[in-house]
Amino acid sequence: HAKEQMSGIAVYKPEIDPHSPKRLAMMSELGRAIREDQLCLYYQPKVKLDSKTFYGFEALLRWNHPELGFVPPNDFIPIAEVTSLIHPLTAWVLEKSISQCCLWHSQGLNVSVAVNLSARNLLDENMPKLVRTLLQKYGLPASSLELEITESSIMSDPSRALRVLQQLHDLGAQLSIDDFGTGYSSLAYLKKLPVQTLKIDYSFIRNMLEDKQDELIVESTIHLAHSLSLKVVAEGVENAALIDRLSSMGCDEAQGYHIGRPMALAQIDEWMAESVW
Ligand code: C2E
Ligand code: CA
Ligand code: CA
Ligand code: CA
Image: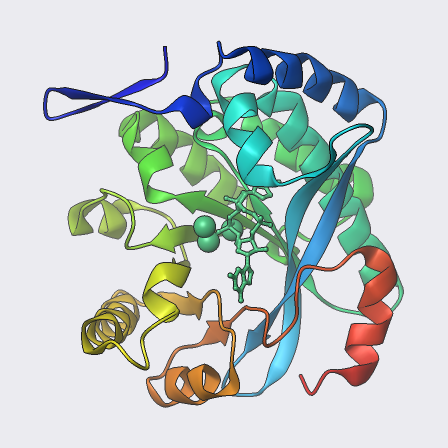
């Protein structure tokens, strides 16, 4: 069963229990979803705060289930993660994102694309080969691909994850630590990881204008990142005041509803026409 050992206490996490009937049904359907084109990617813009320019998209997975309708990724990715489905799922996301990014390049839109990787992907020694093959297949420069990983996904088997990350880095892909501040990694690990960017978790950004502690956490994370020569992205930026404050703190990049929501491909042209970025 899905239990997480925390200092001797087993914490039951029903949301990732692969044996609950609802989850089991979803699991078998997820395999079909991948084959039958029920999945799609939404793209959320990422911008640079100093130059006020838009430079890339994060690919976010969506499942349009024939009966349940729209199923959010937090409901089905944990299921894929405890089964082997995460492998074809990530391969699908990588191929879609890389081919879409190439299409943008061919249209003169020189953007990067960011893909989220799961813990299981970092333990998969075939991952670097898959990424290399897909980059070659579509002719995308590796520097246009960003891979987002979380601290906790590294900690399950740090030395193995580090090997995979090093190979992904050697290919020339950009690596980011997602949800920074919510995991368990130590600063010693941060120094060893071949990453270029920290993404400060939404939970710290959300209230930082009202909550002095959150503001201090954000500010010290920016300083920490910069002193390690890392870029910082703030996620979950929902208003203009946050953009101003983050800019004055020296935060490099931002993402959030205020800048642009995750969008289907059809909405992107409209966003670009109206956006100030
Ligand atoms: P994440 O990687 O931290 O992605 C950011 C989440 O915050 C996304 O939720 C996004 O829609 C949402 N978000 C963006 N801006 C704002 C904002 O201003 N305010 C608020 N309240 N939320 C904002 P989403 O798309 O539901 O994805 C949830 C999580 O599912 C992602 O968190 C990521 O961990 C996972 N995920 C999504 N797509 C993939 C994928 O292709 N592969 C893997 N392994 N995980 C994925
Ligand atoms: Ca992410
Ligand atoms: Ca995140
Ligand atoms: Ca998150």
